[in-house]
Length: 129
Image 1 (cartoon, one colour):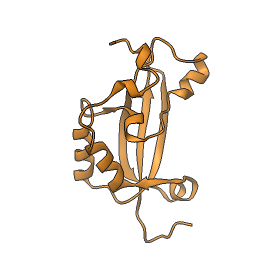
Image 2: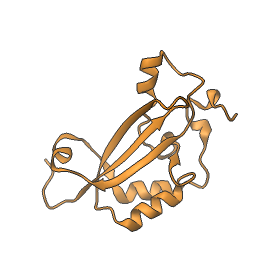
Image 3: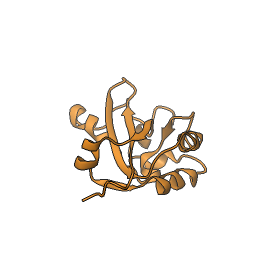
């Protein structure tokens, strides 16, 4: 059980295919995000919002769309989108598994020099290849 003296936050992200179908997810992290954390994170992202989930160890969510479409389509690509980094609600703290520490996630993003699209199984279907 999580103690109340620890602060938790939510990393929200999504996958949007080329037809604008979306799948969302969020991760519960220990730590309290600051505006500086959000700015630092966005500086690591492609165009300030995109990342390759597999490269930073975040569970990809495109498979939710694959379940609806019968698998990958020509609309699929390698990038997920950052949505928000915010304080966790009491309900989220009770119901979500702890994914890790905010500080570690930020360091993981900061360690990326270039986003490697080939780490995504959608790389072969990417329209920009």
